Length: 235
Image 1 (cartoon, rainbow, N blue to C red):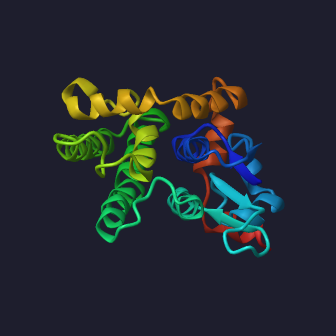
Image 2: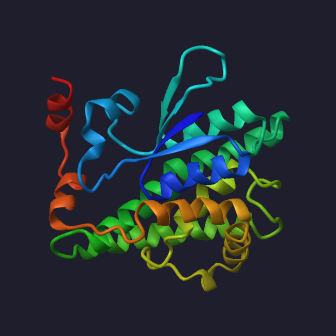
């Protein structure tokens, strides 16, 4: 059994999709990040970065004690290795999928996250920041569109690369991106969204929190952290 620490965010959707695709048994443990539940001592033992998603695999891949894992990319890679699914085993295929996994965790996710932040969560608009991140988001969408021009999936076969990218593209409207401008991405996005496992995964988010609302207090919790936050947690 895998304990899955979750709130309906793009990075958490990656893991719920992976779990549904592989058929691994898991227990969903909601962590309401808008209320600060990510700062509890119990959760910090699993995810010292006070971020979701995180898992605790009680049937660890090496047969040892339960293993905690945080960071969505690390979790996807671990689950792929654990199950032998959704990551090619040949060297070139594995590298191709991992390149795009790390492209997402190092580029598409952070850039689109900042895009969303500066458009929706600042007290006053900052035009330069909005333009910077909307434009860079569009550049990344264009890179993905070009990659998908001659293939069904990002790395030839359906893999953790597709699973990593799909939830972030799911927020394209909030990022001021029009999928009609990226026809290959649109075709791919609709195909991934039609998969039964993906539908089940997204439905779990609806069960946990159908309409997440970010208030001024939750913005303070989510965006008001510093080094002092970490020092207080572990003092």
